[in-house]
Length: 177
Image (cartoon, rainbow, N blue to C red; front, side):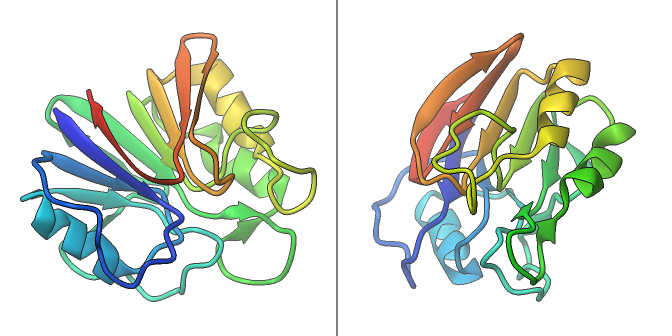
């Protein structure tokens, strides 16, 4: 399965070429219009997304599927997701560390977990705005999804934690699952 991953783009329109993808995964902090234009440019029929800490509270534009605290199977893989970042200021999609623990304490096992924020201690670029979620690290320890994809940290990095590959994306990336 060819996947186009999007995260943290300030563009108002998709200007990164064309291609072919079976699935788009959006990690937040981008306009729905950019996601939809990327889907058109990559002839992609399926879009799963979470909101970032800079996104508005409006629902996603169809056919974008909101994956926040949901599990969905696509192409034989189970996907799950989590919006936002830790609460460094008031606003939507800002969560306390305890909230994330609660959100994920009973979340089902998935193959691929999509998050705006990173797990605590992974790909963090500072100890203030870009602090990762402790609850994500606990979820990884408990469930060990094959892959966790995040944005927010503005890094393109891969890190292995136990049986889970953690992939930080800034901008866009093509991946074969």
